[in-house]
Length: 126
Image (tube, rainbow, N blue to C red):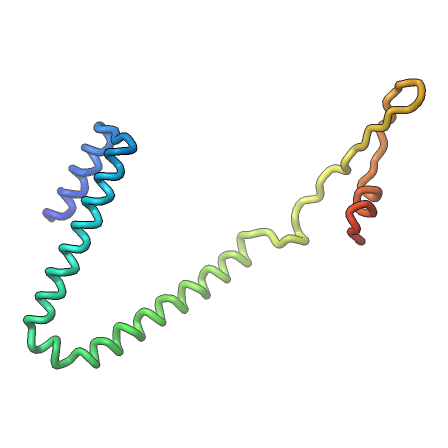
């Protein structure tokens, strides 16, 4: 519960106290120091527990398998959702033909459709 309270208080302070560039840099360095201290203290706790050290190969294998399973499921879900919700390149909505303006001798502007001309100029074949 203390963690949630600290997070909410930090969000409130951050909302009302706008940090400048220098403040953001200092905040980032403080966060990094906090993470380093947290990792150090967790490592010290793990090192002091003889049961964890004894079971480290089993714990490591389970952790590795959990990470691989999580990554695999994430990849599959992203693939399925992107196939379902993201339009394919050849299924993009058709755009209006691009119009080309040419100035003729009497300075009138003639507008003509030139999507075919553009495709030829760009080397694109349908």
